[in-house]
Structures are given as structure tokens and as C-alpha cells.
Image (cartoon, rainbow, N blue to C red):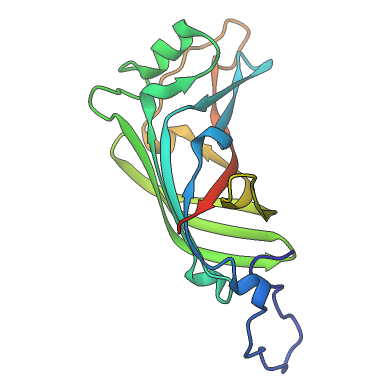
Length: 201
């Protein structure tokens, strides 16, 4: 089921005036469920392998509009000290003044500014990502995974998303040169999102 309806690509065809009742039923306010969601990232390490990580402590809300995707919004707040790459030493370095400076900047945030339906179950959301006090635009491509009522009566929706950033654009510039050429940590970071959100009563 398409949450917002497919984009009409036929020229000179009036847009429908009625909203699909199934889609309209999904309209509302949602809270992201961190126990069943993942905010992850991938960085290239030493030019030869990928290091994967995630943030374990975050909160977020969604407003979904089944009739007008451009009216949908998203807001996420992430505690940087919850970073988890599977290595306590590496996590400690990432929290330090070389990278995230968590004593000064304990959170990063995302606030959407634009939402688009691309057709089918594909969507795009653009917003302001703030890290280290630096705010820059971020565009996330999303796939709608569906909606369902869980055994506890919660109405859920699910999305998967991906994006790429250059960390240096947010002031994350620490690196170390390799003897064989190149650097220890890639500037390009891949972001991945797996979101389950519960509709508010």
C-alpha cells in the first residue's frame, strides 16, 4: 500500500479530489520507537574496510499526511554519547574533542523542511542536520515498508532510508595519513535508517 498515493505524471489530468480512505487513515502524529528502529552509519577505515556504527539513544516524531505528502514532517534528536561501533576505545575517541566533542555538543538534530512523493513507495525528505553546532541540509531517500497493527494494539508504520554526507562539512575533520597513501577515516559517511513509528492515540 502506498502511504501517500502515486504521483500523477499524466499531463492535463486533474488531480483527484478524494483521498483514498486507507491512506487517509494513516494521517496523524507518530512517535519513533527506538527499540525497533536503527540510526546507523558506515565509514571507510584505512582505505580497505568498512566500520559500521549506530546511535542507541534517540527520540523522534513524524507527522504523516495521507492526502498531501508535502505536509509531512520529521524531527529527530540523537544523544551522541550513545554511539556504538562495537569498540569501546573507538567509541571513546569518537566522543572526544577529535570528533564529536560531546561535552560541548551532546546532541545532533534533524528537522525536516521538505517532503516529496517520488512514486510507488519511494519518498524523499530534506531537512536541517545539526552537528557540532553546524547546520547544513541533508536529503534522505526513503522507502515505505507498510503499516500494521501489532499484537499490543499499536498502529505502526515503517520506513527504510539512506543518505550520504561529507563529515568535514559539519566540522568533523580529524584524520591521520597512512604510510601507503590515503587517510585513516573516509570523509564520506553513509547513513542508514530503519524506522518503526507508533501512531499517537
